[in-house]
Length: 372
Ligand code: NDP
Ligand code: GDR
Image (cartoon, rainbow, N blue to C red):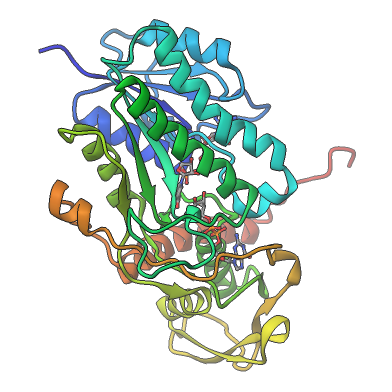
């Protein structure tokens, strides 16, 4: 039987890496689009790399960018994918306030470029497309929990760009009969989550604080509530969405929401440290109340969490909680991870990483200035 061919944009990102491995294991030939960068940006997929001189290749990388339609058309013409997963995006909500035009171009118009490329090449009846839509579309709370029918109210340039992408995907499905779907995915995290998203920032900092490599962590809005799942569970759904009989839009979420402050607490608890929070708003601070792990040199009463207003967003999304009943009933989705299991996975991975850093530090290693 001929192998299925998938094209993944955003292959170097968290989801792109997990999805590549997942599809390769399913026997797909996987093509990924990566951006040119002055440093290597393939850390997350290096274990999948194959020497191009070897035979039986099934994983290929192409240089490309969602802001360049000529290159998208060329790649799709050459690859002729059965399935396209459009995961590429400027995906940081806070950064989108700093780079709104670029975000609109890559995240919004970029999706149009992909859909048009499929149409220009006459592949609209043979190529299925998954669009990485987001719970950020719900923005200002209109209804809880949020479902496929909850009205959108985006609260950032990122979410507004993704709203365009959502509707252009629906429009091309209706106008040209394309098999094009939105996965409205709520926050999903993992040990390979980008370091500036709040969960990974917290798991890294907690590990460093426990090992004595960092004094404290500065965060923004501790009251924000998110429905956090594990990326491994969510990328499986991306694939299932494209295997369904009809092209539809789907909410993927755990149905549970947690405050940022409580996520911090859970991570510290993982290393045996109990926190106590005092104060309010930008004056709130987290102190060490007790430590049950004798391996850590922890000072009871030390301030380890503080708020820095620079992490506040001009407009915030206060509460996300999704209802994935449709995906569970129609696609049979059963997530394997709950939040404690996610924390366990992320914390044990970051502790190992920071132990490596500690080892280097203890061994006297440090990065020198270029002109020393
Ligand atoms: P990441 O930020 O980890 O990855 C984004 C990927 O997009 C990276 O490979 C990045 O490349 C690439 N990229 C960025 N801009 C461009 C561009 N102009 N052209 C081509 N590639 C580009 O995101 P995630 O893996 O977490 O998320 C995947 C997708 O799902 C994104 O679209 C995100 O908005 C969406 N999403 C994510 C959720 C989450 O909780 N993770 C929830 C809902 C939606 P590089 O490595 O070079 O930066
Ligand atoms: P989000 O994720 O904006 O939901 O977007 P992020 O982890 O950045 O923020 C979650 C919540 O935590 C609050 N917060 C902080 N956030 C960051 N990054 N850094 C901090 O120091 C901090 N302190 C508090 C934020 O204000 C926010 O309320 C993610 C991305 O993956 C999007 O691409 C995706 O579409 C959505 O999830 C669903």
